Image (tube, rainbow, N blue to C red):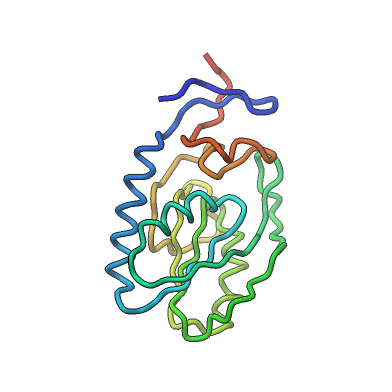
Length: 182
């Protein structure tokens, strides 16, 4: 496992290896293939955080499928702002489509609680959620996660698409904020 790292003014220690993440994503891909056999699902990846998870998950999907991207934001620094901002809109028709939303992490659930009704209003045939990570202790807006990678503690995480003020997304492993870097 990797050594502790410093990003901006904070220290992070290794939390989850790339191998563990990729093995779980392969399992999720198999489950999705089974569930969507013959259905041609549309995956909507929420940027920026989900790009690594979306890429690795999509490589594990073997049924005919499409992917598009939307940008939603509710974070600044290490805290949620409590406000959801749509920066890039959905430009794909989802009426009667089987839709899977791909999210990197669900903590409070506020982002998806505001976004999912917008999707439901467009009358998809089905709507499911795939999230690499979920912080059950932080959840105040319950979201049904259909394809979950890992439940994690309510700690600030970094790497594998997750950032701290723009940095750290490119790390292969997932790190956890620490007060004691040694």
